[in-house]
Figure: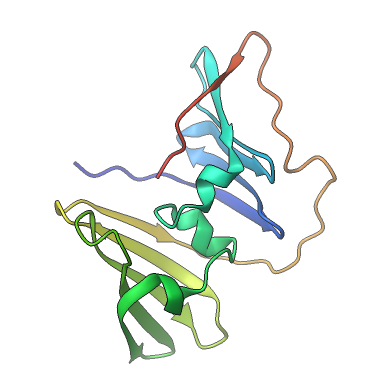
Length: 160
């Protein structure tokens, strides 16, 4: 099964994120430092979970938010130059039975352009990051989640 999702990802340190999906349209994922929220249009509920659950290395968000020291959390690290980019590969410590390999595609400037997550069962999740705009001016409420009218916010399980 192949599923593709796309949208606009906004990141702000320390630990704030907003992903407004264009495919599927209207889906949103927000982290406001304290909580993470996930909502898909048409659902009667939005899920909320402590942002600390997203600190787990299993979440690619941790890499994007700069919440990890890669050399302390990955084993078997390799770095391979490929044109103007580099591929950094490794296996998360303590997760070898679940995750076969993580590959970061990094520009020569240090920008993460892609993250590939290979599960031990053969499943692969890949994030392609394009059209980066460093330090955009953002509205104060950019990282706030407001559910649509009639949508309940419930305790959920953090995505991995």
